[in-house]
Length: 478
Image (cartoon, rainbow, N blue to C red; front, side):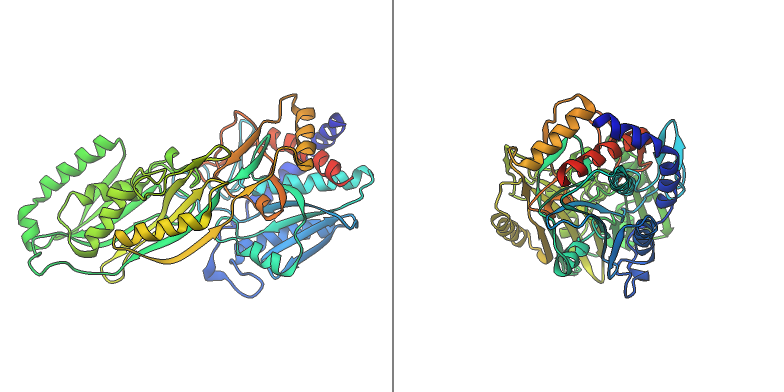
């Protein structure tokens, strides 16, 4: 049967490529400045949702828009349900793309655009797979629901709204990870740490002042740029000649093997900018956090008050503390590995003080409550407070569950490779379902460019995934 689905998917190639390019051209980054009733995450996200739902209605499926938070496209009318959960929002784009991120471009069989891999490309492949199952005429005994989320990259408010107003299928998959399949996902603790503004001692006139510090705009991404504005002050200007500071800065950049700039904005005012390396927040060790890196340089200069505390937290505690040792959170399990920590959004100003948003991913079998208490204790010891805190549960489907067995069979038929079970630090909509798994679209050995500059997916891989998804939907719902 796998050959049948492969043939049907290949027949869709020309139409699919045109459709996915049009879909990816929609800028669906969350933009709360354009949020309105029915468009809770902004006009771009709403446009992407409406586009996919309109396609479903045009093709004869029953569709529903849940107040702009989520949507459904459904096949069949059985009492039992199978879910295919996708998301159409994307992360911010950053700088340095070879071609514009919302002008999809094909180069050497690769489709480049923000969302090509995460998750708009796979979402459309899953929709095409649903249509292939419908057009096959094969009988189903269960209802299949393609559930479309709109806030996966930020706060998952879309799924909260969905669960309050609709039902969640007990089994299914999310095409938002890697093949063969991810059956264990870490949970998340997302705190925002804050410190109030203080100026330091009265005799600190010779010290530097940190006027502002900005790095990162996505909690689940490693910041690839940071900038800080520093005021020297009269006495500080005497102690730290600009030439000396410039020399120290160049030495720092060379030592860290990165790029940056020091600009003189006024006689007593300097702006520092440094580049890092972006990475997904689930694997912070694969990136270079520009914010904590810049803090390491500034920390060696003379600051006082909350500025000193802010820089100290970033440089002494968080910088390269990928596994939470200095936060006293380090732990791991055999199912999903080590706890990880990413500092995704870093801010400071003299008037508002400092804030640091962390994305902590804890192992699937670890108690969330225990580690929240450990975090609170450690943050208090450091003189900071937790302004807000969100958590999401971990997820684990036993290897002997029928959904695992069915999807393993499908994958092995299509690839000839064993369906080795994976775990992930990422969070997908699969965990919304009691027995959901993340299933592709990234094949073993292929590069993951999710959240990165020049994100891409191989077109042939999306077609392979489409065929796998079609057979998976059929096997789960027949």
